[in-house]
Length: 454
Image (tube, rainbow, N blue to C red):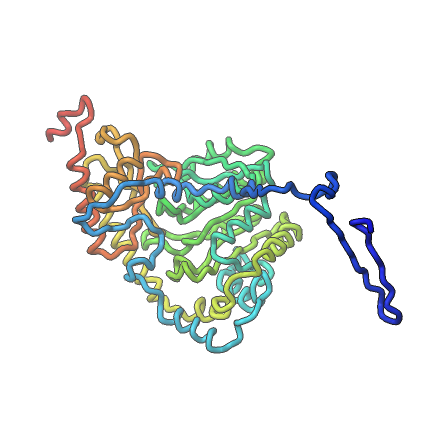
């Protein structure tokens, strides 16, 4: 019998069954022209995984230094307000989740863009006459990070470019480059409380620019843009016909001397995808609830961008249904006192930290106006034994067990970022240790001995 003969047997009234009999007398008889994979293992990571790079992880993980065993570690590096337990969410938020769980209504799949009722609640919460919203304008996501990812994926193709702030949240670059999208950083100006260098920003725009990313309030800067500055940003976008991805996860988290202006309320002719979520304002980053608000009053996006976002959301099938079920109560029952107390604490800690670090020779903190961070400039000429901010912060860990993120993580060398969510007593201790560290390593710059003697 032919070793590869196929026999078809007729079983009377039964349907025909295809019987395949394969006789392989020996390996040598297998034809050499058989198609298929090579007979050896060759498993390689994908191009996307190879292109995925997180600067923060790469820098922090490469730090081999050990903290001072005689001093308790104080981490001023993690943008998670829940770490120390001093900033719990409001009991109403917790109760909303319990009610959703106990109702038994939210254990199944939801539509990939979120329950209609939950999207209606988000639309209602953020709706205003200057920037109206309906449920169809809202897509719920697994955290604000996924909202940003979907926005980049729907707006940009491989080979195109996006404009991102420098210093800025490293996730923009991580996501974009994994998708083959070029990143062009535009400069924020510390001497102007981190306003955008608008002339330099506009010079970066070309025919391949897919979108402009605007992060306000800012991570890592803690800055809040004024209405007039936001209008100037919008003017650039309108002139160049570039849509905006507005990362507003820290929206409304501003101190009493500032005001948050949602970007979409200031323009009707620039299409904007605004990203937000529960993580920061409601102090529940682990609940992974974010959203995209589609602002397109001139119908520039049309149906294509909306349809594209829906299709992309179907890759994950939406965020946690329990949190979706709790959204109505979270948005409408959380007392104003909770928001007020959170911001009062953050402002108090920001003022304390800014005041303490501003008094230390060699450091130049920039006063924040919101979010959960402040940036501190290092006058490197006064610390000649350190090559850069990475070495400076490494040695700070080794000697004082205080961990700050070097701003090289945000593409802005010679600065470091401080998280201001830690308990006040720890903030005081951290600032005291930073002062001791700087005093031990400070050197007068050449030609400035008179100033040092004062």
